[in-house]
Length: 250
Ligand SMILES: Nc1ncnc2c1ncn2[C@@H]1O[C@H](COP(=O)(O)OP(=O)(O)OP(=O)(O)O)[C@@H](O)[C@H]1O
Ligand SMILES: [Mg+2]
Image (tube, rainbow, N blue to C red; front, side):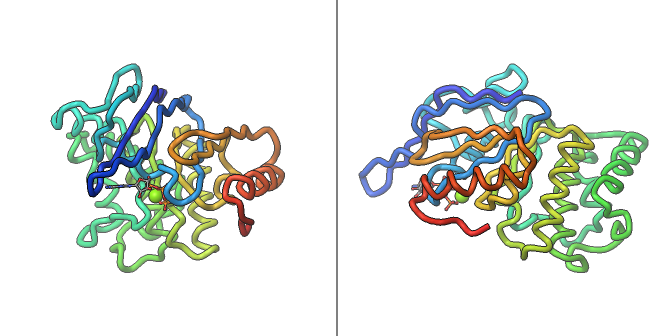
């Protein structure tokens, strides 16, 4: 479980201060799929960067599985990143010189997993994300949607407590993007992964359990899904109109 308490982050640039996150409180339960939405500049990436330790924060706590991971030392942070957090980036970040299979093995090798447990885990991931057929291909030989599914499989290979994703469908066309959304749903439903996903895509968000809306570094609303995704999508679109002051395209 992830609990964020009173998280504050200020940027100082050219002598003036800019508050990117103001006393933010949020929690994500184990097994929950949470989508974070909000206009550009609302603090979504900053929030993810604070959770992943890519950025320090000014105040607050980020408690993951009972342990505060905010502003901890490099060594502890490396361990948390390696064993507790899974990352999916917009541009995949697969290693081009390694095959799909080797990319998925890599985090497990770094964590000194034995061959047997690695093979078992990888088998589950190849099946769950339907990437067995491409396992011996290199990243430049597969499609964008496939790359992102491999990236999700790799991110889950060490059984992280939470999977963090920043606009994972941002660079994909709508077909690849649907395949990726499906992969997140599979990760959550089939493998029980806890997901924290920043997205501009209301369709992607409509499959989450809960949408957290950020504006000016604060949570302005949470929408809990208790209808099918198709109906939830309408609630999200209506709500986004209000906070963006504009119409969102479905
Ligand atoms: N390194 C930085 N230095 C100064 N200001 C920053 C820095 N990083 C982010 N900001 C500011 O903090 C605010 C939040 O940025 P952030 O990247 O978190 O927004 P976002 O919600 O992810 O936006 P987008 O949807 O465009 O990705 C923005 O106003 C941004 O200009
Ligand atoms: Mg961002």
